[in-house]
Length: 375
Image (cartoon, rainbow, N blue to C red; front, side, top):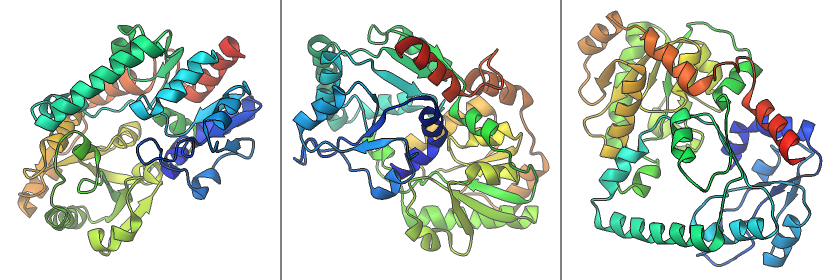
């Protein structure tokens, strides 16, 4: 949650400046059973919120309902459409509180392809059937609808337009563009930057029915290849860690190499070359017009392979297998490394900056829309 609040810091700051009576609702203690409880929000995350936010943690369902009746603007942490959040949807509907979703990350990972693979596994089929039953009941009994969906991915917007559960869709710029507007970093070519995807640890691949790849083999080959790039380019390698990466593992995983967290945009702006697997943070490399190399892997599972292929198709990055790469292959790749100008331009216009919204942050558009329609 600390990482999510840091990611959305511009939203929280702007909303605090433009709205009164803001509540950050931590619903982790409404139910205490292991089956129904949600993950708690720690003190470090709370301290990142602007002072104007009032943090409330209801201890039971009655307290939770009292918060909803306050008619304040409420941000609900860890809110989802999973079955354990049914009561939140129910009481939002009962008290006629508008439900607003903000989905402005413009992610480009190919989860649909992974889902089709997941269906071939027995447990996956059972899970999918149970989920369909729940969503059907949710739709018919609770009649849950989203009043306004703010979204930056036009393809996903077209998908939601077919749903009767979304009343209004507003296309905005991406949150990546917000940060680009808000922060001015020096643009240089001082470093080689690796965008960490936390591949051996990322639990998304397990959720979609895939096993984790071998950690030891992954990091030994990754560091070997990063050493080659560092030597060939004659520039220091900096690893921009995934927001959820446990930094206690960094010495074991990356050795002597410099690692940074929550500074990806800053170092990407100063990169001569950016190296990635399938990190959504590669958006920053496109913003700053940086050359990118994609590390693929013959030992990756299907989940990671599919996400790598999705990004490569969209942005045209040259690829190299990190398990097979030798010095000569890296040299050959770097000698012809260039940007696919057409794909970069198309990606920016399709996913990051809406036509006619240049210079406008998504949080400003969202706040203005909420004020005009709901306040």
